[in-house]
Amino acid sequence: MRKIFSTVTRKMVAGYLVIVFFSLLAIGFALFRMDHQAQHTEQLVKVDFHIFDLLRDLQQNLAAQDNIDKQLLILREPEFEELRENRSAELAELLEALSRVSLPEAMQNLPRQLRNYQEINGRLASALDGEDWERVQELADDLIVPVRGQILEILSDARQEQQQRINDGLSQLHANTSEAYRLTLFIALVGLGLSLPVGLKVFFSIGNSVNTLKAATKEISAGSFEHRPPLKGQDEFAQLAREFVRMGRKLRELEQLRLDANPLTRLPGNLAIDRELDNRLEKDLPFSHLYIDLDNFKAYSDRYGYKAGSDVLAKVGQMIEEVAGQYGNEEDLIGHIGGDDYVVISSLDKGELIAQQIIRAFKRLVPEFYNQADREAGLFIGKDRYGVERSFPLMTMSIALIRSDHLKNPSRLEISEDCARVKEFLKGQEGSNYLVDRRK
Image 1 (cartoon, rainbow, N blue to C red):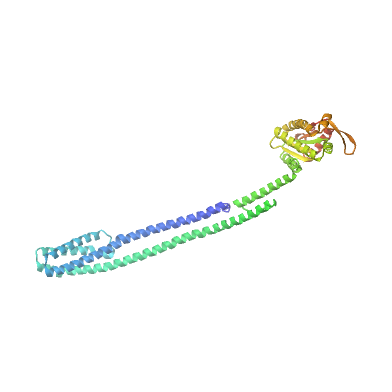
Image 2 (tube, rainbow, N blue to C red):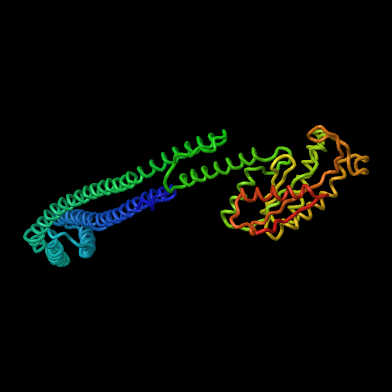
């Protein structure tokens, strides 16, 4: 579980999913309750209110018939008979409509009573057609009026009951709506409550991590390459902190290389050379080590001055770099130990070729370092380190080439000692030379 929620992204997704889940749950519950409320409302409108309207219309119809019958018996005018027929037809339509609705149990006998009333009312209508007024009066007094009065009382009670049923339904509808609102709000708040800790944790975690990384950036930019941001874990910021540490190490290495690089040639110095040797030795990668030394450089520098000597060192370093770049490998190292000593570390198959080409390039380059007289003479008179005047030939180059496969247990110390022995031998030779130490 800890691994699942280890990254900021996953924490944010988890919080988002909690909100989405409870939001969908709240929406689903709200829709369900809204559908239930809609059905309840439809029941009220299509049934309860409709029954209430029918009961009201029936009550009004019977009351109107009672009024018409009274006037008809007194005035005995034909137009009242027509009104009575219209009310009777209207009653039949209302009774038909009443039969199509589902009546409450207390009203189940109402349609039967109304049909009974219609049957008696039909007998009264027949007596009216025959103008048998005594029969009409008898039917009205003995049957119509009592039955109609009884039905009117039933309708009045039924209307009150139906009104109460509607009121109860509306109250229940309101209560259900309130309950649905509260539960929907509760579900939404639960979702927010569960996601809030995740959100706050992510928010403060991001804020703290960003501030920590900003501080680390300032430290590293100020040169404190050893600074380690105090962020742990598996999230993106912890990974970024580890990248900061790696970047710091790399910057420190680059800084060391910058400080180690020879200021004259800009070539890597002893630190980079030692690191390259150690890397190849640790990985058991065979290599050629070329130790390059200029002969008679001190005498040249004494004759032509420090500036000319520095120019020679810079141009020779540039020449070596160009030759090794052309005939060597991309991963080769060209270094400047200091003074007139250079190093090239290359593969076994390229070492001797590079040495040959460096000697050739140097022979072409060296005449331009001298004035015409010294070039023509091939030498010049100067003082040696002991202050004794003697002749010095033009500068030459000695290259000691050590192959790692010729060493039983190659090490930096053994390579350095072999280079010193080979260089000492080459110093006694005339001209520019290279020598491969082929001794096992």
